[in-house]
Length: 155
Length: 440
Image (tube, rainbow over all chains, first blue to last red):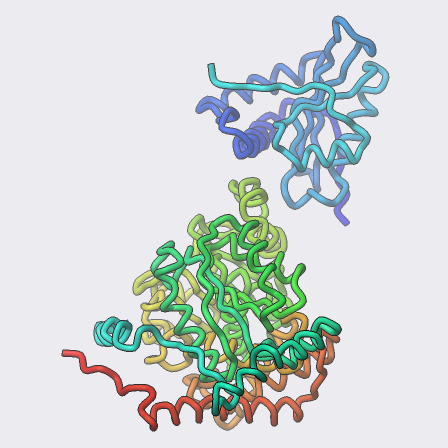
Protein backbone atom coordinates (compact mmCIF):
# COMPACT_ATOMS: atom_id res chain seq x y z
CA UNK A 1 0.00 0.00 0.00
CA UNK A 2 1.09 3.54 -0.74
CA UNK A 3 2.70 5.37 2.17
CA UNK A 4 2.08 9.08 2.35
CA UNK A 5 4.55 11.47 3.90
CA UNK A 6 3.22 14.45 5.84
CA UNK A 7 5.06 17.69 6.44
CA UNK A 8 4.50 21.40 6.94
CA UNK A 9 3.82 23.24 3.72
CA UNK A 10 6.51 25.51 2.33
CA UNK A 11 6.44 28.32 -0.14
CA UNK A 12 7.35 26.01 -3.03
CA UNK A 13 4.10 24.11 -2.40
CA UNK A 14 1.90 27.13 -3.07
CA UNK A 15 1.11 26.44 -6.76
CA UNK A 16 0.05 22.90 -5.94
CA UNK A 17 -1.92 24.06 -2.89
CA UNK A 18 -3.78 26.50 -5.10
CA UNK A 19 -4.60 23.72 -7.53
CA UNK A 20 -5.89 21.39 -4.82
CA UNK A 21 -7.78 24.21 -3.10
CA UNK A 22 -9.65 24.93 -6.32
CA UNK A 23 -10.62 21.27 -6.48
CA UNK A 24 -11.79 21.44 -2.87
CA UNK A 25 -13.90 24.54 -3.44
CA UNK A 26 -15.37 23.09 -6.63
CA UNK A 27 -16.33 20.02 -4.64
CA UNK A 28 -18.04 22.30 -2.10
CA UNK A 29 -19.86 23.93 -4.97
CA UNK A 30 -21.52 20.57 -5.65
CA UNK A 31 -23.16 20.65 -2.24
CA UNK A 32 -24.78 24.07 -2.34
CA UNK A 33 -25.10 26.91 -4.85
CA UNK A 34 -24.12 29.28 -2.05
CA UNK A 35 -20.62 27.83 -2.44
CA UNK A 36 -20.26 28.98 -6.02
CA UNK A 37 -16.58 29.62 -6.56
CA UNK A 38 -15.42 33.07 -7.55
CA UNK A 39 -13.58 33.78 -10.77
CA UNK A 40 -10.55 35.09 -8.86
CA UNK A 41 -10.21 31.89 -6.82
CA UNK A 42 -6.69 31.19 -8.09
CA UNK A 43 -5.22 34.56 -7.11
CA UNK A 44 -7.10 34.59 -3.82
CA UNK A 45 -5.90 31.09 -2.99
CA UNK A 46 -2.33 32.05 -3.74
CA UNK A 47 -2.46 34.97 -1.31
CA UNK A 48 -4.35 32.91 1.22
CA UNK A 49 -1.72 30.18 1.37
CA UNK A 50 1.22 32.59 1.23
CA UNK A 51 -0.13 34.26 4.37
CA UNK A 52 -1.12 31.05 6.10
CA UNK A 53 2.30 29.49 5.68
CA UNK A 54 3.92 32.47 7.41
CA UNK A 55 1.27 32.98 10.06
CA UNK A 56 1.94 31.71 13.59
CA UNK A 57 -1.81 31.12 13.91
CA UNK A 58 -2.20 28.78 10.97
CA UNK A 59 -0.92 25.32 10.22
CA UNK A 60 -0.75 24.06 6.65
CA UNK A 61 0.22 20.43 6.15
CA UNK A 62 0.76 18.64 2.87
CA UNK A 63 0.51 14.92 2.12
CA UNK A 64 3.11 13.65 -0.33
CA UNK A 65 3.38 10.52 -2.41
CA UNK A 66 6.87 10.05 -3.86
CA UNK A 67 7.55 13.74 -3.57
CA UNK A 68 4.28 14.80 -5.15
CA UNK A 69 1.68 16.67 -3.09
CA UNK A 70 -1.59 14.74 -3.22
CA UNK A 71 -3.51 16.38 -0.38
CA UNK A 72 -3.43 19.09 2.26
CA UNK A 73 -4.96 20.35 5.46
CA UNK A 74 -5.14 23.87 6.83
CA UNK A 75 -6.05 24.67 10.41
CA UNK A 76 -6.32 28.02 12.15
CA UNK A 77 -5.71 28.61 15.81
CA UNK A 78 -8.36 30.86 17.31
CA UNK A 79 -9.47 31.90 20.75
CA UNK A 80 -13.03 31.14 21.84
CA UNK A 81 -13.90 34.30 23.73
CA UNK A 82 -16.79 33.03 25.79
CA UNK A 83 -16.26 29.32 26.22
CA UNK A 84 -14.08 26.64 27.60
CA UNK A 85 -12.09 24.98 26.25
CA UNK A 86 -10.52 28.27 25.24
CA UNK A 87 -8.09 27.67 22.37
CA UNK A 88 -9.46 26.08 19.25
CA UNK A 89 -7.63 24.40 16.37
CA UNK A 90 -10.06 24.83 13.51
CA UNK A 91 -9.61 22.68 10.41
CA UNK A 92 -10.83 24.90 7.61
CA UNK A 93 -9.48 23.11 4.54
CA UNK A 94 -9.00 19.40 3.98
CA UNK A 95 -8.49 17.71 0.64
CA UNK A 96 -7.08 14.45 -0.66
CA UNK A 97 -7.02 13.41 -4.32
CA UNK A 98 -9.59 10.66 -5.09
CA UNK A 99 -7.15 7.78 -5.41
CA UNK A 100 -5.88 8.35 -1.86
CA UNK A 101 -9.33 8.22 -0.29
CA UNK A 102 -10.85 5.25 1.54
CA UNK A 103 -7.37 4.03 2.43
CA UNK A 104 -7.08 5.63 5.88
CA UNK A 105 -4.79 8.39 4.53
CA UNK A 106 -7.37 10.99 5.56
CA UNK A 107 -7.31 9.76 9.14
CA UNK A 108 -3.49 9.76 9.05
CA UNK A 109 -3.39 13.32 7.79
CA UNK A 110 -5.82 14.44 10.47
CA UNK A 111 -3.82 12.58 13.09
CA UNK A 112 -0.62 14.31 12.00
CA UNK A 113 -2.31 17.70 12.23
CA UNK A 114 -3.72 16.95 15.67
CA UNK A 115 -0.27 15.95 16.91
CA UNK A 116 1.14 19.22 15.61
CA UNK A 117 -1.57 21.26 17.23
CA UNK A 118 -1.80 19.29 20.44
CA UNK A 119 0.37 21.48 22.62
CA UNK A 120 -1.23 24.68 21.43
CA UNK A 121 -4.97 23.99 21.33
CA UNK A 122 -7.54 22.48 23.65
CA UNK A 123 -10.27 21.65 21.18
CA UNK A 124 -10.14 20.58 17.52
CA UNK A 125 -12.99 21.51 15.22
CA UNK A 126 -13.62 21.09 11.50
CA UNK A 127 -15.88 23.00 9.16
CA UNK A 128 -17.33 21.82 5.89
CA UNK A 129 -20.60 22.12 3.91
CA UNK A 130 -23.58 20.75 5.82
CA UNK A 131 -24.55 18.46 2.97
CA UNK A 132 -21.12 16.85 2.71
CA UNK A 133 -22.13 13.52 4.18
CA UNK A 134 -18.76 12.00 3.44
CA UNK A 135 -17.18 14.56 5.79
CA UNK A 136 -19.90 13.99 8.40
CA UNK A 137 -19.19 10.29 8.31
CA UNK A 138 -15.40 10.82 8.39
CA UNK A 139 -15.33 13.12 11.41
CA UNK A 140 -18.02 11.20 13.30
CA UNK A 141 -16.02 8.03 12.88
CA UNK A 142 -13.02 9.81 14.37
CA UNK A 143 -14.93 10.94 17.45
CA UNK A 144 -16.09 14.42 16.41
CA UNK A 145 -19.64 15.66 16.89
CA UNK A 146 -21.55 18.63 15.52
CA UNK A 147 -21.56 21.65 17.85
CA UNK A 148 -22.39 24.59 15.60
CA UNK A 149 -24.77 25.02 12.69
CA UNK A 150 -24.54 27.76 10.09
CA UNK A 151 -27.76 28.54 8.26
CA UNK A 152 -27.78 30.75 5.23
CA UNK A 153 -30.11 32.46 2.81
CA UNK A 154 -29.52 35.00 0.14
CA UNK A 155 -30.41 38.40 1.53
CA UNK B 1 -33.06 2.61 -39.80
CA UNK B 2 -34.34 2.87 -43.31
CA UNK B 3 -37.39 4.94 -44.15
CA UNK B 4 -39.16 1.82 -45.38
CA UNK B 5 -38.90 0.12 -42.01
CA UNK B 6 -40.29 3.21 -40.32
CA UNK B 7 -43.16 3.53 -42.79
CA UNK B 8 -44.17 -0.09 -42.38
CA UNK B 9 -43.92 0.15 -38.59
CA UNK B 10 -46.14 3.23 -38.42
CA UNK B 11 -48.68 1.65 -40.74
CA UNK B 12 -48.67 -1.65 -38.84
CA UNK B 13 -48.95 -0.13 -35.38
CA UNK B 14 -52.62 0.85 -35.66
CA UNK B 15 -53.36 -1.99 -38.10
CA UNK B 16 -52.52 -4.62 -35.49
CA UNK B 17 -53.13 -2.41 -32.47
CA UNK B 18 -49.67 -3.04 -31.05
CA UNK B 19 -47.72 -6.27 -31.18
CA UNK B 20 -48.84 -8.48 -28.31
CA UNK B 21 -51.90 -9.98 -26.74
CA UNK B 22 -52.54 -12.43 -23.94
CA UNK B 23 -53.79 -15.85 -25.05
CA UNK B 24 -54.96 -18.64 -22.68
CA UNK B 25 -53.06 -21.92 -22.62
CA UNK B 26 -55.60 -24.19 -20.93
CA UNK B 27 -58.63 -25.84 -22.56
CA UNK B 28 -61.94 -23.99 -22.29
CA UNK B 29 -64.75 -26.06 -23.78
CA UNK B 30 -67.64 -24.69 -21.82
CA UNK B 31 -68.22 -22.00 -19.27
CA UNK B 32 -68.21 -24.69 -16.64
CA UNK B 33 -64.46 -25.02 -17.06
CA UNK B 34 -64.15 -21.68 -15.36
CA UNK B 35 -65.11 -23.40 -12.12
CA UNK B 36 -61.74 -25.07 -12.37
CA UNK B 37 -59.66 -22.21 -13.77
CA UNK B 38 -61.37 -19.63 -11.64
CA UNK B 39 -63.47 -19.79 -8.50
CA UNK B 40 -64.25 -22.08 -6.75
CA UNK B 41 -61.55 -24.47 -8.06
CA UNK B 42 -58.75 -21.96 -8.13
CA UNK B 43 -59.02 -21.46 -4.36
CA UNK B 44 -57.32 -24.82 -3.82
CA UNK B 45 -54.37 -23.64 -5.88
CA UNK B 46 -54.19 -20.38 -3.96
CA UNK B 47 -54.34 -22.26 -0.68
CA UNK B 48 -51.46 -24.49 -1.72
CA UNK B 49 -49.36 -21.46 -2.66
CA UNK B 50 -50.22 -19.66 0.56
CA UNK B 51 -48.74 -22.62 2.41
CA UNK B 52 -45.63 -22.67 0.23
CA UNK B 53 -45.04 -19.49 -1.73
CA UNK B 54 -42.36 -21.10 -3.87
CA UNK B 55 -45.14 -23.10 -5.51
CA UNK B 56 -46.14 -19.88 -7.26
CA UNK B 57 -43.28 -20.70 -9.66
CA UNK B 58 -44.97 -23.97 -10.63
CA UNK B 59 -48.68 -23.36 -10.21
CA UNK B 60 -48.86 -20.09 -12.11
CA UNK B 61 -47.33 -18.40 -15.11
CA UNK B 62 -44.59 -17.09 -12.83
CA UNK B 63 -42.06 -19.71 -14.01
CA UNK B 64 -41.94 -18.13 -17.44
CA UNK B 65 -43.10 -14.54 -17.07
CA UNK B 66 -41.07 -11.37 -16.84
CA UNK B 67 -41.83 -7.68 -17.06
CA UNK B 68 -39.98 -5.36 -19.42
CA UNK B 69 -39.88 -2.23 -17.28
CA UNK B 70 -39.02 1.30 -18.33
CA UNK B 71 -39.71 4.92 -17.49
CA UNK B 72 -38.94 6.00 -21.02
CA UNK B 73 -36.09 8.25 -19.92
CA UNK B 74 -33.67 7.12 -22.62
CA UNK B 75 -35.40 5.30 -25.43
CA UNK B 76 -33.18 4.04 -28.26
CA UNK B 77 -31.36 7.10 -29.58
CA UNK B 78 -34.48 9.21 -29.06
CA UNK B 79 -33.76 10.38 -25.53
CA UNK B 80 -36.33 11.10 -22.83
CA UNK B 81 -39.54 10.57 -24.80
CA UNK B 82 -41.66 9.37 -21.91
CA UNK B 83 -43.24 6.06 -20.90
CA UNK B 84 -46.09 6.08 -23.46
CA UNK B 85 -43.71 6.56 -26.36
CA UNK B 86 -41.50 3.80 -24.96
CA UNK B 87 -44.34 1.28 -25.10
CA UNK B 88 -43.90 0.19 -28.73
CA UNK B 89 -40.23 -0.47 -28.03
CA UNK B 90 -41.10 -2.53 -24.94
CA UNK B 91 -43.67 -4.47 -26.96
CA UNK B 92 -41.00 -5.20 -29.55
CA UNK B 93 -38.60 -6.35 -26.86
CA UNK B 94 -41.27 -8.61 -25.39
CA UNK B 95 -41.91 -10.06 -28.84
CA UNK B 96 -38.22 -10.97 -29.21
CA UNK B 97 -38.25 -12.52 -25.74
CA UNK B 98 -41.12 -14.78 -26.81
CA UNK B 99 -39.94 -15.62 -30.30
CA UNK B 100 -36.28 -16.29 -29.57
CA UNK B 101 -36.41 -17.36 -25.95
CA UNK B 102 -39.93 -18.63 -25.41
CA UNK B 103 -40.20 -16.17 -22.52
CA UNK B 104 -43.55 -14.54 -21.74
CA UNK B 105 -42.63 -10.90 -21.40
CA UNK B 106 -44.93 -7.91 -21.17
CA UNK B 107 -44.25 -4.17 -20.99
CA UNK B 108 -44.63 -2.05 -17.88
CA UNK B 109 -44.14 1.64 -18.60
CA UNK B 110 -43.88 3.63 -15.40
CA UNK B 111 -44.54 7.28 -14.89
CA UNK B 112 -41.74 7.38 -12.33
CA UNK B 113 -38.58 9.41 -12.82
CA UNK B 114 -37.17 9.36 -9.30
CA UNK B 115 -34.76 6.40 -9.14
CA UNK B 116 -35.53 5.57 -5.50
CA UNK B 117 -39.24 5.53 -6.18
CA UNK B 118 -38.63 3.48 -9.31
CA UNK B 119 -36.81 0.89 -7.22
CA UNK B 120 -39.68 0.74 -4.74
CA UNK B 121 -42.28 0.27 -7.46
CA UNK B 122 -40.37 -2.47 -9.28
CA UNK B 123 -39.53 -4.25 -6.05
CA UNK B 124 -43.21 -4.48 -5.21
CA UNK B 125 -43.88 -6.39 -8.44
CA UNK B 126 -41.84 -9.40 -7.35
CA UNK B 127 -44.60 -11.78 -6.18
CA UNK B 128 -46.21 -11.96 -9.62
CA UNK B 129 -43.12 -12.30 -11.76
CA UNK B 130 -40.26 -14.63 -12.57
CA UNK B 131 -37.90 -11.82 -13.56
CA UNK B 132 -37.39 -8.18 -14.46
CA UNK B 133 -35.85 -6.80 -17.62
CA UNK B 134 -35.05 -3.11 -17.20
CA UNK B 135 -34.98 -1.17 -20.42
CA UNK B 136 -34.18 2.28 -21.75
CA UNK B 137 -33.53 4.06 -18.45
CA UNK B 138 -31.17 7.02 -18.51
CA UNK B 139 -27.63 6.84 -17.16
CA UNK B 140 -26.52 7.07 -14.37
CA UNK B 141 -29.93 6.30 -12.78
CA UNK B 142 -29.88 2.92 -14.51
CA UNK B 143 -26.80 1.86 -12.49
CA UNK B 144 -28.38 2.80 -9.18
CA UNK B 145 -31.64 1.08 -10.10
CA UNK B 146 -30.02 -2.14 -11.29
CA UNK B 147 -27.64 -2.37 -8.32
CA UNK B 148 -30.43 -1.80 -5.79
CA UNK B 149 -32.90 -4.17 -7.40
CA UNK B 150 -30.28 -6.89 -7.71
CA UNK B 151 -29.54 -6.54 -4.00
CA UNK B 152 -33.15 -6.45 -2.92
CA UNK B 153 -35.00 -8.88 -5.19
CA UNK B 154 -34.98 -12.66 -5.22
CA UNK B 155 -35.77 -13.00 -8.91
CA UNK B 156 -33.45 -12.23 -11.84
CA UNK B 157 -33.06 -8.54 -12.63
CA UNK B 158 -31.33 -7.58 -15.84
CA UNK B 159 -30.70 -4.25 -17.49
CA UNK B 160 -30.19 -5.05 -21.10
CA UNK B 161 -28.54 -1.77 -22.07
CA UNK B 162 -25.84 -2.60 -19.54
CA UNK B 163 -25.56 -6.36 -19.23
CA UNK B 164 -26.88 -7.46 -22.62
CA UNK B 165 -24.58 -5.14 -24.50
CA UNK B 166 -21.65 -6.02 -22.26
CA UNK B 167 -22.18 -9.75 -22.78
CA UNK B 168 -22.53 -9.47 -26.56
CA UNK B 169 -19.46 -7.23 -26.75
CA UNK B 170 -17.43 -9.57 -24.58
CA UNK B 171 -18.43 -12.54 -26.76
CA UNK B 172 -17.33 -10.72 -29.89
CA UNK B 173 -14.08 -9.65 -28.25
CA UNK B 174 -13.24 -13.17 -27.09
CA UNK B 175 -13.40 -14.36 -30.69
CA UNK B 176 -11.70 -11.31 -32.17
CA UNK B 177 -8.77 -11.87 -29.83
CA UNK B 178 -8.67 -15.55 -30.71
CA UNK B 179 -8.46 -14.64 -34.39
CA UNK B 180 -5.68 -12.15 -33.84
CA UNK B 181 -3.73 -14.35 -31.41
CA UNK B 182 -4.09 -12.14 -28.39
CA UNK B 183 -4.80 -12.85 -24.76
CA UNK B 184 -7.47 -10.91 -22.93
CA UNK B 185 -5.29 -10.38 -19.86
CA UNK B 186 -2.53 -8.84 -21.99
CA UNK B 187 -4.37 -6.48 -24.29
CA UNK B 188 -4.89 -2.77 -23.81
CA UNK B 189 -8.49 -1.81 -24.39
CA UNK B 190 -9.83 1.65 -25.12
CA UNK B 191 -13.53 2.20 -24.46
CA UNK B 192 -14.90 5.23 -26.25
CA UNK B 193 -18.15 6.43 -24.69
CA UNK B 194 -18.87 5.96 -21.01
CA UNK B 195 -22.59 5.34 -21.00
CA UNK B 196 -24.48 2.33 -19.68
CA UNK B 197 -23.04 0.01 -22.34
CA UNK B 198 -19.34 0.72 -21.99
CA UNK B 199 -19.34 1.05 -18.20
CA UNK B 200 -20.99 -2.37 -17.97
CA UNK B 201 -18.61 -3.72 -20.62
CA UNK B 202 -15.57 -2.51 -18.66
CA UNK B 203 -16.89 -4.23 -15.55
CA UNK B 204 -17.67 -7.47 -17.36
CA UNK B 205 -14.32 -7.52 -19.18
CA UNK B 206 -12.60 -7.18 -15.83
CA UNK B 207 -14.58 -10.20 -14.61
CA UNK B 208 -13.52 -12.01 -17.79
CA UNK B 209 -9.86 -11.45 -16.92
CA UNK B 210 -8.94 -8.26 -18.75
CA UNK B 211 -6.31 -6.07 -17.08
CA UNK B 212 -8.41 -3.16 -15.92
CA UNK B 213 -5.38 -1.04 -15.04
CA UNK B 214 -4.56 -0.96 -18.76
CA UNK B 215 -8.10 -0.13 -19.82
CA UNK B 216 -8.81 3.45 -20.86
CA UNK B 217 -12.24 5.04 -20.90
CA UNK B 218 -12.86 8.10 -23.00
CA UNK B 219 -16.01 10.19 -22.61
CA UNK B 220 -17.14 13.57 -23.89
CA UNK B 221 -14.58 15.27 -21.63
CA UNK B 222 -11.68 13.15 -22.88
CA UNK B 223 -9.66 10.41 -21.26
CA UNK B 224 -10.90 9.41 -17.83
CA UNK B 225 -8.24 9.28 -15.12
CA UNK B 226 -8.14 9.50 -11.36
CA UNK B 227 -7.02 13.12 -11.34
CA UNK B 228 -9.33 14.52 -13.96
CA UNK B 229 -10.84 17.82 -12.89
CA UNK B 230 -14.40 16.55 -12.63
CA UNK B 231 -13.54 13.61 -10.36
CA UNK B 232 -15.15 15.11 -7.26
CA UNK B 233 -18.29 15.85 -9.21
CA UNK B 234 -18.31 12.26 -10.51
CA UNK B 235 -17.87 10.94 -6.98
CA UNK B 236 -21.16 12.55 -6.02
CA UNK B 237 -23.10 12.27 -9.27
CA UNK B 238 -21.77 9.19 -11.02
CA UNK B 239 -20.00 6.87 -8.57
CA UNK B 240 -19.87 4.09 -11.18
CA UNK B 241 -17.77 6.15 -13.56
CA UNK B 242 -15.76 7.42 -10.58
CA UNK B 243 -14.90 3.86 -9.54
CA UNK B 244 -13.72 3.07 -13.06
CA UNK B 245 -11.64 6.24 -13.13
CA UNK B 246 -9.83 4.98 -10.04
CA UNK B 247 -9.31 1.45 -11.37
CA UNK B 248 -8.53 2.02 -15.04
CA UNK B 249 -5.70 3.94 -16.70
CA UNK B 250 -3.03 3.38 -14.07
CA UNK B 251 -0.61 5.36 -16.24
CA UNK B 252 -2.91 8.39 -15.75
CA UNK B 253 -2.86 9.21 -19.40
CA UNK B 254 -4.82 12.34 -20.22
CA UNK B 255 -6.00 13.85 -23.49
CA UNK B 256 -8.50 12.80 -26.10
CA UNK B 257 -9.36 9.63 -28.02
CA UNK B 258 -6.39 9.81 -30.46
CA UNK B 259 -4.02 9.93 -27.46
CA UNK B 260 -5.74 6.94 -25.89
CA UNK B 261 -5.48 4.93 -29.11
CA UNK B 262 -1.71 5.25 -29.32
CA UNK B 263 -0.47 1.66 -29.18
CA UNK B 264 -3.83 0.20 -28.09
CA UNK B 265 -4.89 -3.32 -29.15
CA UNK B 266 -8.64 -2.90 -28.94
CA UNK B 267 -11.12 -0.08 -29.43
CA UNK B 268 -14.69 -0.53 -28.25
CA UNK B 269 -16.70 2.51 -29.30
CA UNK B 270 -20.22 2.84 -27.93
CA UNK B 271 -20.60 6.58 -28.14
CA UNK B 272 -22.78 8.68 -30.43
CA UNK B 273 -23.84 7.97 -34.00
CA UNK B 274 -21.29 8.62 -36.72
CA UNK B 275 -19.92 8.56 -39.27
CA UNK B 276 -16.71 10.57 -38.95
CA UNK B 277 -16.58 10.50 -35.14
CA UNK B 278 -13.39 8.44 -35.43
CA UNK B 279 -10.75 9.24 -38.03
CA UNK B 280 -8.78 6.72 -40.00
CA UNK B 281 -5.45 8.08 -38.83
CA UNK B 282 -6.52 7.57 -35.21
CA UNK B 283 -6.95 3.85 -35.95
CA UNK B 284 -3.50 3.92 -37.54
CA UNK B 285 -2.08 4.95 -34.17
CA UNK B 286 -3.12 1.60 -32.72
CA UNK B 287 -0.91 -1.50 -32.82
CA UNK B 288 -0.80 -3.60 -35.99
CA UNK B 289 -3.99 -5.55 -36.72
CA UNK B 290 -6.09 -3.93 -34.01
CA UNK B 291 -9.62 -4.96 -33.09
CA UNK B 292 -12.17 -2.20 -33.63
CA UNK B 293 -15.80 -2.31 -32.50
CA UNK B 294 -18.01 0.55 -33.67
CA UNK B 295 -21.26 0.02 -31.83
CA UNK B 296 -23.18 3.30 -32.15
CA UNK B 297 -26.56 2.95 -33.85
CA UNK B 298 -27.99 3.63 -36.33
CA UNK B 299 -24.69 4.79 -37.85
CA UNK B 300 -21.40 3.46 -36.47
CA UNK B 301 -18.74 5.94 -35.28
CA UNK B 302 -16.90 5.36 -38.56
CA UNK B 303 -17.77 3.14 -41.49
CA UNK B 304 -16.41 -0.39 -40.99
CA UNK B 305 -14.55 -0.33 -44.33
CA UNK B 306 -12.74 2.82 -43.23
CA UNK B 307 -11.55 1.03 -40.10
CA UNK B 308 -10.38 -1.88 -42.27
CA UNK B 309 -8.59 0.46 -44.64
CA UNK B 310 -6.85 1.96 -41.64
CA UNK B 311 -5.54 -1.47 -40.71
CA UNK B 312 -8.14 -2.99 -38.39
CA UNK B 313 -7.96 -6.79 -38.49
CA UNK B 314 -11.46 -7.34 -37.11
CA UNK B 315 -14.31 -4.86 -37.16
CA UNK B 316 -17.73 -5.23 -35.59
CA UNK B 317 -20.71 -2.86 -35.50
CA UNK B 318 -24.21 -2.80 -34.09
CA UNK B 319 -25.80 -3.12 -37.51
CA UNK B 320 -27.35 -6.17 -39.09
CA UNK B 321 -26.42 -5.13 -42.63
CA UNK B 322 -22.67 -5.29 -41.86
CA UNK B 323 -20.69 -8.37 -40.79
CA UNK B 324 -20.26 -9.01 -37.04
CA UNK B 325 -23.34 -7.50 -35.50
CA UNK B 326 -22.83 -7.09 -31.76
CA UNK B 327 -26.44 -7.65 -30.89
CA UNK B 328 -28.12 -7.83 -27.48
CA UNK B 329 -30.84 -9.96 -29.01
CA UNK B 330 -28.34 -12.81 -29.11
CA UNK B 331 -28.11 -12.64 -25.35
CA UNK B 332 -31.19 -11.61 -23.40
CA UNK B 333 -33.72 -14.22 -24.65
CA UNK B 334 -31.30 -17.03 -23.88
CA UNK B 335 -30.11 -15.65 -20.56
CA UNK B 336 -33.68 -15.39 -19.30
CA UNK B 337 -34.58 -18.80 -20.76
CA UNK B 338 -31.79 -20.39 -18.73
CA UNK B 339 -32.40 -18.29 -15.61
CA UNK B 340 -36.15 -18.93 -15.60
CA UNK B 341 -35.82 -22.65 -16.17
CA UNK B 342 -33.69 -23.07 -13.05
CA UNK B 343 -35.89 -20.57 -11.18
CA UNK B 344 -32.80 -18.51 -10.53
CA UNK B 345 -32.82 -16.01 -7.68
CA UNK B 346 -30.56 -13.69 -9.69
CA UNK B 347 -28.61 -13.27 -12.88
CA UNK B 348 -25.12 -12.64 -11.59
CA UNK B 349 -22.29 -10.99 -13.51
CA UNK B 350 -20.63 -14.38 -13.80
CA UNK B 351 -23.80 -15.78 -15.37
CA UNK B 352 -23.66 -12.92 -17.88
CA UNK B 353 -20.02 -13.75 -18.50
CA UNK B 354 -20.87 -17.40 -19.03
CA UNK B 355 -23.48 -16.32 -21.58
CA UNK B 356 -20.80 -14.33 -23.38
CA UNK B 357 -18.42 -17.27 -23.39
CA UNK B 358 -21.14 -19.61 -24.64
CA UNK B 359 -22.02 -17.18 -27.40
CA UNK B 360 -18.37 -16.97 -28.43
CA UNK B 361 -17.94 -20.77 -28.30
CA UNK B 362 -20.85 -21.24 -30.63
CA UNK B 363 -18.72 -19.93 -33.48
CA UNK B 364 -16.66 -23.02 -34.29
CA UNK B 365 -13.00 -22.75 -35.25
CA UNK B 366 -13.91 -23.63 -38.85
CA UNK B 367 -16.44 -20.84 -39.01
CA UNK B 368 -14.37 -18.27 -37.16
CA UNK B 369 -13.41 -15.55 -39.60
CA UNK B 370 -12.78 -11.79 -39.42
CA UNK B 371 -16.27 -11.37 -40.86
CA UNK B 372 -17.83 -13.92 -38.52
CA UNK B 373 -16.85 -13.54 -34.87
CA UNK B 374 -20.32 -13.68 -33.39
CA UNK B 375 -23.36 -15.80 -34.32
CA UNK B 376 -26.29 -14.23 -36.12
CA UNK B 377 -29.90 -14.20 -34.95
CA UNK B 378 -31.00 -16.77 -37.48
CA UNK B 379 -28.74 -19.42 -35.96
CA UNK B 380 -31.55 -20.15 -33.55
CA UNK B 381 -29.84 -23.06 -31.80
CA UNK B 382 -27.36 -20.62 -30.30
CA UNK B 383 -30.10 -19.60 -27.87
CA UNK B 384 -30.41 -23.14 -26.58
CA UNK B 385 -26.66 -23.41 -26.07
CA UNK B 386 -26.47 -20.09 -24.24
CA UNK B 387 -29.55 -20.88 -22.12
CA UNK B 388 -28.09 -24.23 -21.08
CA UNK B 389 -24.75 -22.62 -20.17
CA UNK B 390 -26.43 -19.92 -18.10
CA UNK B 391 -28.61 -22.47 -16.31
CA UNK B 392 -25.60 -24.58 -15.46
CA UNK B 393 -23.72 -21.54 -14.18
CA UNK B 394 -26.69 -20.62 -11.95
CA UNK B 395 -26.60 -24.12 -10.55
CA UNK B 396 -22.85 -23.88 -9.91
CA UNK B 397 -23.30 -20.58 -8.11
CA UNK B 398 -26.17 -21.87 -5.99
CA UNK B 399 -28.64 -19.30 -7.24
CA UNK B 400 -30.90 -21.94 -8.83
CA UNK B 401 -34.06 -22.96 -6.98
CA UNK B 402 -34.41 -25.78 -9.48
CA UNK B 403 -30.86 -26.82 -10.43
CA UNK B 404 -30.43 -28.24 -13.93
CA UNK B 405 -27.27 -29.31 -15.71
CA UNK B 406 -26.34 -28.33 -19.25
CA UNK B 407 -27.98 -31.30 -20.98
CA UNK B 408 -31.18 -31.07 -18.97
CA UNK B 409 -31.61 -27.40 -19.78
CA UNK B 410 -30.59 -27.94 -23.39
CA UNK B 411 -33.52 -30.33 -23.89
CA UNK B 412 -35.93 -28.14 -21.95
CA UNK B 413 -34.93 -24.87 -23.63
CA UNK B 414 -35.10 -26.45 -27.07
CA UNK B 415 -38.64 -27.66 -26.43
CA UNK B 416 -39.86 -24.32 -25.12
CA UNK B 417 -38.21 -22.21 -27.82
CA UNK B 418 -39.39 -24.52 -30.60
CA UNK B 419 -42.94 -24.45 -29.25
CA UNK B 420 -42.89 -20.70 -29.14
CA UNK B 421 -41.80 -20.41 -32.75
CA UNK B 422 -44.30 -23.00 -33.93
CA UNK B 423 -47.07 -21.28 -32.02
CA UNK B 424 -46.47 -18.02 -33.84
CA UNK B 425 -46.23 -19.82 -37.20
CA UNK B 426 -49.50 -21.58 -36.58
CA UNK B 427 -51.27 -18.37 -35.59
CA UNK B 428 -50.09 -16.93 -38.89
CA UNK B 429 -51.08 -20.05 -40.86
CA UNK B 430 -54.54 -19.94 -39.39
CA UNK B 431 -54.86 -16.24 -40.08
CA UNK B 432 -55.29 -15.25 -36.47
CA UNK B 433 -52.37 -13.04 -37.34
CA UNK B 434 -53.05 -11.09 -40.52
CA UNK B 435 -50.39 -10.62 -43.20
CA UNK B 436 -48.54 -7.30 -43.18
CA UNK B 437 -50.42 -4.28 -44.51
CA UNK B 438 -49.31 -2.75 -47.80
CA UNK B 439 -47.34 0.45 -47.68
CA UNK B 440 -47.60 2.81 -50.63
